[in-house]
Each structure stands twice: as C-alpha cells, then as structure tokens.
Image (cartoon, rainbow, N blue to C red):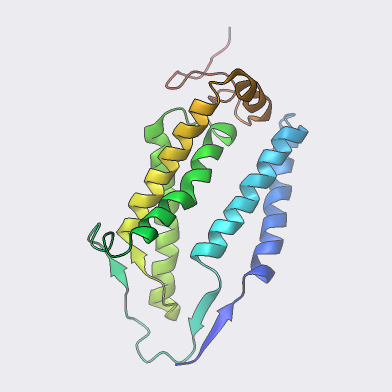
Length: 198
C-alpha cells in the first residue's frame, strides 16, 4: 500500500497566521485589543495548531488501499489504560492548556461546562479521524478513551487556572488579559450569573 501525506508546516503555518489575525481583529472590533489580550490570542492559536499537529497531521492518505472502508474504532472505555497508561496521561495533559485558556477567552464559569467544552472539541477531533479512516484510509484510531482523557484534562486545567487566579497578583493579571467581560478572569465569581448592568 502506498500513501501520500498532507504535511504539517505548509498547512499549519498559514492556518495559524489566519487564526491569529482573526482573533486580533475580533478584539479590535470590540475595543478590547490590548497587548495582554493579544498575547492570550496568540498563545491560544499556537496551542490549537500544536494540538492539530499532534492528533491529525501529517495526514496519511492511502492511494491504493485495497480495503478503504475499514474502520478503526475503540468504543469500550479503559480497555487499554493498563497496557498504555502513558497514552491516557498524554490525552489528559494535552487538554490541560485548553482548560486554562477557557477562563481567559470564554465565559465558561463552571468545571462541568469546561469539561463539556473539552469533550466537544475531542469529539470533533475523533470525528475527523474517523472520517479520515472511512474516506482515505488514514490509519488513525477513534478511541473513546481519548474523549475521557481530554475532558478530564480540560477540567483539570480550568480548575488549576481558577485556583491560581485566587492569588491577587495573578487575579489582576488575568483580569487584564481576559477576553470575556463576564468571565471568571474578569472578576465574576465561579457559577455566578453574568452581570446585567443597571
């Protein structure tokens, strides 16, 4: 079986530049563009590119796969954790930064919602991997353990960020870097309703 690969850098470099430009434009249009918020946007975009590079790229495409419709899906959780604990740990660690970014760039104010965001992002990644297997025989595996590890990592990252923001210097820095006017980093308490003004 011969394959061709969709490479990493020619895809991610322009995509990352475009994402950074879009995030800075979004902040500028809302009058919230500052160096700290711009730095958060750059970090978020570079982190997103690193995740894509790890889980999707390089993307192998089988050009003469005799079984193009084979499906590699693991739906039973924790069957491989004892044999490959490092894999689960990596899935957790990979999404910790996502959880730490959520209080800064979104209005997510509970750990449950943070975990839900991590789960949705992970589902999207697994769906792309599964589609790759179905369409071009990419050889990736869609694994339910990835969903569990990614959601857990996001929850851990969110919790760590919120705890760190309890330290006054870090809390003030996070408030200045926050994108969300009603988020935790901007001063809203965890679980509190958004301010309505008045």
